[in-house]
Image 1: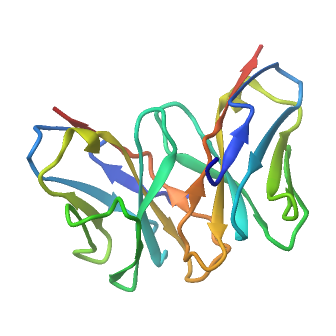
Image 2: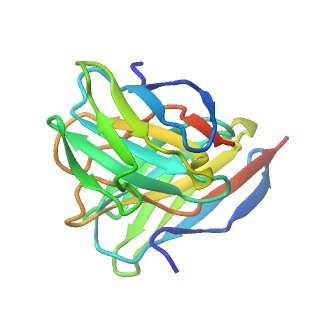
Image 3: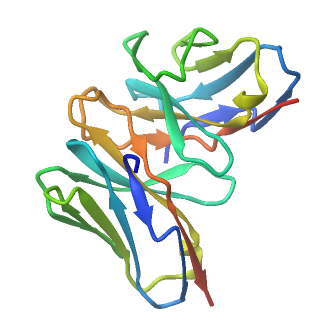
Amino acid sequence: SQQGEEDPQALSIQEGENATMNCSYKTSINNLQWYRQNSGRGLVHLILIRSNEREKHSGRLRVTLDTSKKSSSLLITASRAADTASYFCATDAAGGGNKLTFGTGTQLKVEL
Amino acid sequence: EPEVTQTPSHQVTQMGQEVILRCVPISNHLYFYWYRQILGQKVEFLVSFYNNEISEKSEIFDDQFSVERPDGSNFTLKIRSTKLEDSAMYFCASSPRAGGNQPQHFGDGTRLSIL
């Protein structure tokens, strides 16, 4: 598989529930970032976690990073309909300059 | 909040023609990037640009592509002799400082359709 694979590919939940998305990657990284993309729009940066960090919070977002398993998870708590979007992880590979390698994305649908 | 702006939002071009996609990065940012996203596929890195030169490019970024910062604000991607497979969303991004651990700020993209 390729660098940056998210699962599930699609997730449908009810408003108020929590949504968890996972990302796996292959190479050593400097950091891992999560982005949101609304349909037809650009990518919005959500949160960055450095390779020496294990967990990070920002509002309703919680990101974990396990470098031994080369995986990360994004948890959105108390989801809202406005959270409906595609979510991507992106890695900044160690020694790889500043380019980001994106995953395949998780399409999240939050229903009222 | 400052943002990255891209023009045009949609470009339709005949195969073989040249196109220039334009971006205005956030004003105090130093690193600039182009990415593309073919419909239904991953976002792919094309090129990064720092201090008026290419700092890194992918294998996609061949001689057909070029980038330029013609003045203090614009950052352009030129695609010569376009092909059908160049149809994609093209995203410009910028980040504030040199070095890693910087979030990249993306524009809304230009949808390029090659006929």
